[in-house]
Image 1 (cartoon, rainbow, N blue to C red):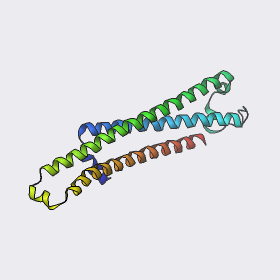
Image 2 (cartoon, helix red, strand yellow):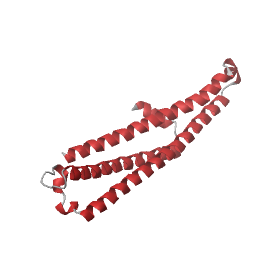
Image 3 (cartoon, one colour):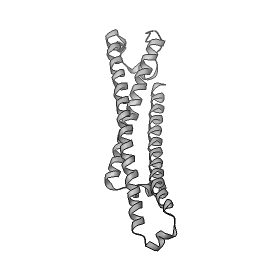
Image 4 (spheres, rainbow, N blue to C red):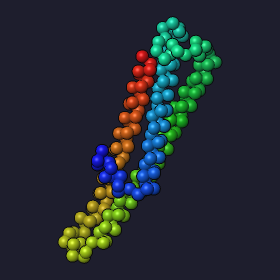
Length: 172
């Protein structure tokens, strides 16, 4: 966790707020995954059990028995399809937004490195090869955003797994 705090110190307030927006989008995506999987489980349980309510256990036994009428099933299927559509649209938005945010962070890190090199004394700059500076400017910004992207993906996968485990506990 100390590595993450060190990494966040390199970001300015605007970039940190964008990261927090990304985290909020990831939490919403995890909730939507939870609800979409829960809806699929209700449908699968209904169709596997061929519409009989006496074998329904867990969270489904708490539902009203009229929920499995034909009009309610059509409504529930529309709701589930809408949740899937919204979840996938939000996923596309998340990928696009995270790519833009991480690219701007990469550019900012490269700019900070470049400014740091410009403030060094001329003798220190001449001791190293120019290609080393260019490689550092390009590579370090890319490595930092790659680390940040993987960390954000880890958080998203952890949240999704957590909500799926909650769903499995509620279902059984």
